[in-house]
Length: 60
Image (cartoon, rainbow, N blue to C red; front, side, top):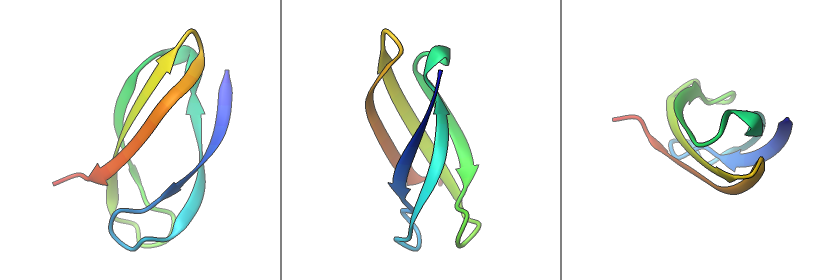
């Protein structure tokens, strides 16, 4: 189950859209910002294939 979300880059502050696979459960991964190309650490929390929270941080 895929869901499109809007996030802000912790480096440049620009908002962009990305897709999260809710069927994979809780996730922690790195994805590059589509604007400044810096690595963003994503922390995705789910409950029964529902998005609970999304947090982003620098990957340092």
